[in-house]
Image (cartoon, rainbow, N blue to C red; front, side, top):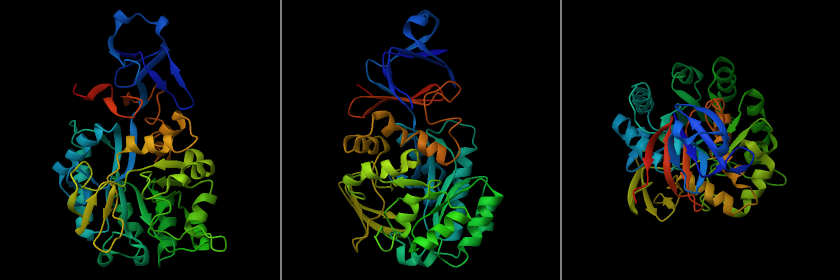
Length: 382
């Protein structure tokens, strides 16, 4: 049995000092230092840094040169190992609008890694299928030639591995698809890459939409006479919203406002592509050319193409540019996304009975140590 001590423990509702977290694969007990005998445990000293729950990235396409849509199991392992260093302990490998065959190959690759029974890095929760059931007018960096009519049977066929998927609620066949998937499976239905009106969006919510793909980006904006998808997403209490908090996709001035409206329904994501963790230069996304410069990834026509954000940086950006407490900011990248996909009983916060997925990070949100299921999966080299 291990014991984590000497840290500022970020719990779901507060930060506490002087706690001892006793764990094996799961967290067995949380006590005060005075209540335990240190000689009974393998001690891990946080050295007065923050102890936080492992982060949960439910929307990430690529990292370190790899892309989920490549359909390459080794590439998925590369990503899983890489994001551990950013404090991510659970994730949803995310596919793009590529050909149906390529999507199925990608599903198979994720399935292979997830079901291997071997250690591969951050734990895969399931696939996030971003497309191909989207509106061409809001395709963003997605390939228009591979956009398809919404097909519930395709999602249900792969519901063993698909955790959530994106659909434009206004396109032909969408409402029927949303209703069928939401009633016949536990797959989370998200609206995104959509030109829907407020009325069309709310019809989608009534049909079973419970999530929003990167709020504000690739959707109809909030206007005082046309509230659009953004208005519908913000208004619906039963709809969670993703946010790319890199200060480029979304102006930091909106961080507080969105949190005040959505609260525990706000989920930080990275939407990271293969250029993440790599030098500036030319890359691809869904087979299309992308140029990375700093925090910006753009297609030749200037279209924003994903990000190179890390999830620990997203938490830092949110915390430093809002009035949120550190617990609230961390929840947005841990407990809230876990809730959105129905995993909150197992992960997302430091609590007895949950997996011992925890990170130690400094005051700049740099990850020093990552614990995955009670084992040290990453430790910063000094």
